[in-house]
Image (cartoon, rainbow, N blue to C red; front, side, top):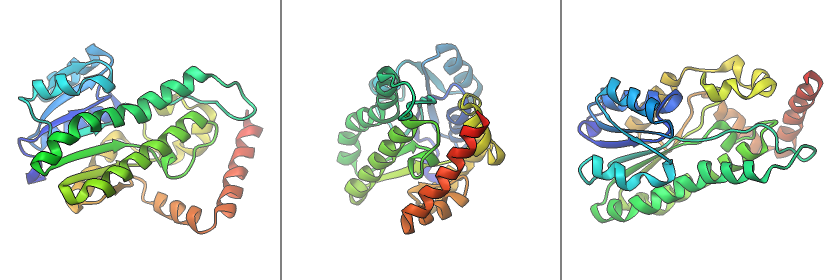
Length: 257
């Protein structure tokens, strides 16, 4: 048990299933009071009823006020988990600006808007916790998914910015960066996901467990797949070699299409 989370007020976006639902269940098991947010009101209600939480349906970008009211005026932990993933957007493929705009809005700007709403209160009292569900694509890059990869890089950069700017004022930030997780989003990645992600995919509950270990150890970067640390180091140490390796995977994917 993480004692600091007992009776904490927690918001989890995109919590109608997958990683979000696993996070909501784990926070509730730790004794926290949890707002379960999802665009799908039925899914939010089902998870909230299961864990004794509060369902707040709607766009993750605009529910901070309602969630805060539902929790009695205070949010201690905000999990920016809602995300979208679209395949495509490659240089030689169709450019759908709506896909790029939606990816940017959900995967990055929803985090920015939540932080904008929460930071004044957190900084005034000297404590708060922001959890960003990013992806290994945010520290590496995923083949066949340009909008997803680019916006997850943005989400990771924003989480870094929050941490380096406000940690001395009591803000704790965690960036969760898994590879494949057995969710509906993974199922929608198609052959690229089959090639790169599915062989080592973990359960959503494994991601929640990794986060809680990171909270106990006060770590920013949460890696449910520990091997991502090695890939991250290799990418930084020799970008050309890393890119050549990823291009090899890209060619294998193209041959399989």
